[in-house]
Amino acid sequence: MRPKNLWVAYLALLATHCLHAQNAQMVSLMVNGCGLEDGAGEFVLAYSGSTSFVASTATINLSYGTSSPANQAFTESFDDNSTSVLSNYIASLEALLPLAGCTSLNLIAGTVGTTINAGSHILIINADNPNATPAPVRLIDLTGMCSILKDVYVFISTDITWADSGLFSNSPSGTRHLRSTINTTTTDFTYTNSWSSNADGNYAAWHDGGGSAFIYANYASCNPTDTNILPVNLLYFKALPKDKLVQVKWATAEEIENSHFEIERSADGKTWARLATIAGKSNSSSRINYSYVDSFPLTGRSYYRLVQYDFSGTSETFETVSVWRDEINTFNIYPNPCRNEINISGDLDIELITATNSTGCEFTLKKTQDQKYDVSQLSPGLYFLTIASLGKVNKVSFIKND
Image 1: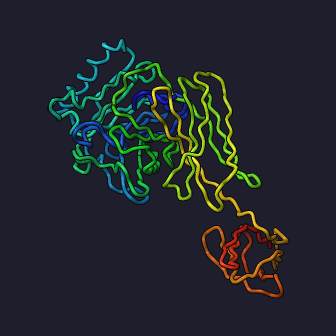
Image 2: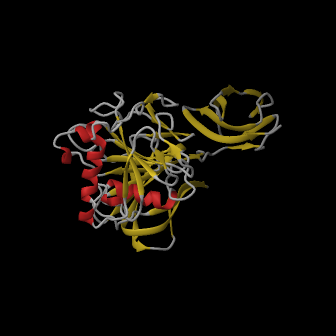
Image 3: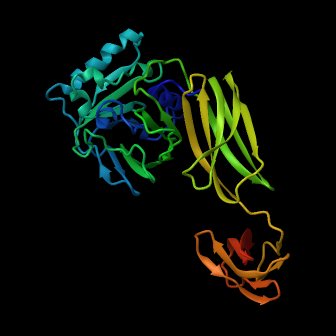
């Protein structure tokens, strides 16, 4: 299932991916903050790694942008606690812990010069959060961390780049990029508009090593309310072309209150349609394998993603995978792999034939004799052959050998 709040979603991911052998990096981001001002509700959680270090704007450095590498730094300065804003904020957070029976969570004021212990976590919030009035409106309830995390260093970014109105695009038209440098480790991340709706509580999490966001969460509240609910632990999700079909496979290591999965498909990675609904196993502590066959797949490049729903209706969208599938044609090309020329058999009145390599370079093929085309000048590798015939475009792949 998907947990009922933001922090539980992250913590479940953290428990399986971050507590041991995790790189020093950002692991989660609240993209669409809760409250009247997005900036007050936005926050970042990072992991310190396996080595302790001294906090500075160089050893805790985060950037955001529309291109790679992200270059718009938003942690160039931190509150120094000289007016006790940070201490008072942490005291407010700690006051909530006994109410939840939480005794294991250790919240620590983080400033430049603070020694960050190995194996700990770093929470970075916008300066508008603790300075908001009344404070409880934007107070991040951290009781959802109990029994899962121990030391959490809380930093307040006073960087003016991180505006009160918010920094992170809630529904970007393209890819957004982030970069974290924690201690001496630099990692790059991306996210897209993959949430089911544009709403407060949109959140993303990444695997060890960064890259594309692995989890897109959508919650009405940014605060944890339940420490016992864990999400589906997804082991993998993949789609494989097989003859005229595409086989979609995934597996879970654990499920709690898991209602069902939905498989979605897209021709462009942006507009999605529900393909199938697969029942979950409700509650399971052992590995469960799932599969689905797309009997009418798209030709060319297509995209698949998995959306999981718990019994409360809350959903979790996992990473996207892509598949290339050749069109099933009434003609054949041979030999394949080829060397100097290819033969095309079938009832075709070929008007134009081109070959495109894996980098997108297109080559027009020259006819040597009836239904034979010269490929001797092509470099070795995989090519996609496009044949225009009688107003129809046919596509198939072939391999050019030395």
